Amino acid sequence: MSRIVLTGLFLCWLPVAVQAGPLVPGHVAADAKWLIHVNLEAIKSSDLAGLCPVEWKEHAASGEKVKRMTEKLGLNPLQDLLGVTIYDTLYKRHSGVMLVHVRNLDQARMLESFKKSKPDHTTREHAGRTLYSWTEKHHGHGEHPVTGCFASEHTILFSSSPEQAQAALDVLDGKQEALAGDAALLKGFPRRAMIASRAVDVSDEYQTVTRCPVLKHTRAASSSFLEKDGQLIVRYVLEANSEEQAKNFVAIVDGLKALGAMHLGRHKAMAPLVDSLKARAKGTTVTINWQASHEAIAHAVKEGVERRKEMRERWKKLHEQRQKTKAAEETKAAEETKAAKEE
Image (cartoon, rainbow, N blue to C red; front, side):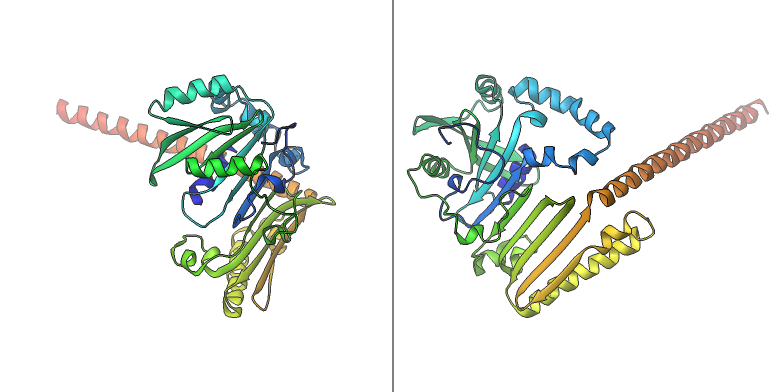
């Protein structure tokens, strides 16, 4: 699960036009246990994105990595990525299905680059598409099998096995049942959120092996990031294993809030953002809310940029001073050595 999620946040078939933006339940298998949807179009067009300093945007747009990726894959990640949907029908590490929705895609160029980098890949055919399978090496995480294909002109599909990819294609083609609009997995799932996720039916077995500190103590969990009425709203809802665990979650959030207040409370723009974090428990249900106006976030971003500039100047001056001190010490040592030899 974790590897597919990380890959999806890094990359970040319907036989019709591009299906991006809000989540489309018809893209997800009916028996999915967890789901993440990233609406990149909503993020890029949000008021929040407009708060980013111009120099950050210009730096990102002109970055060498973006240029190399565009030339290599025929896809500009800042312009062509529309959204990412990730899900799985079970809880297992390094497992899942990822659908990457794109505006433009040069399949020929992408395949050419792929075949050069993965010459030992294998292929198989399914539902009129070619599935490519290979082994991906991840530093610190070993080797993991990956299967990918072009699900449509505007959708790339990745999964952890050929069989999983075939099942996902059957869902997209309407041959297998897709997620119903009233499914438990979609309960409270804000489909127009910039980022939303939900997990249900977390088993005892998975709780004992997962590294996720949240799923380790919950039966279900959801999160969302959305904009509404000039506010950025972040919301988490957890169904804890017990009332005691629910109270523990609240205590953890309160502790993090107190820690944040200690480190950031002295900064005028940051203090209200820290204070807006709220958590409460009712029975086994934990609700965590955080929200702030775009104006408050803009002030915090501005303050952060100014602080970063100040810190950069301080480090620059400190480095220059250290270099001068080092040069003076080396000059003094050389003079002393020379004087000793002359004596």
